Length: 108
Image (cartoon, rainbow, N blue to C red; front, side, top):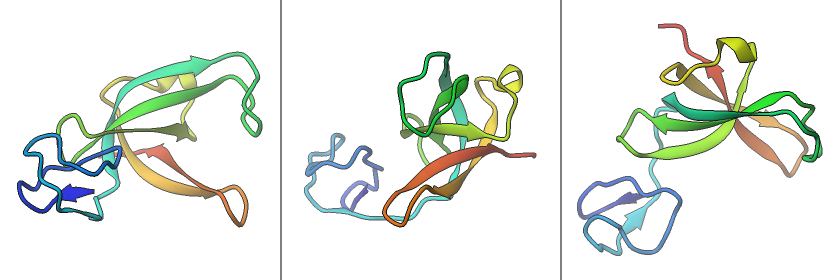
């Protein structure tokens, strides 16, 4: 979501802009580009569909500092994953009802 008053991106979505308290929030498409802000390697099983080890990454989107989202970085050996690594969104369809935003390494 993006504030129609001050143009601040708001995620996760909420009813009021945290910057200006504006209530005119509208959906807006973003580039799908970002960098790895942080990550954690999961070693224990527990989430159906995910086989350890795998990394859960916090991604900072290019559109705005502090605009964060979460996903997995696919097709990247865990030892090569690093904070600041550029990534690009990809969508992984798990079923007819579930599609996850995931991330792949972006070569610049």
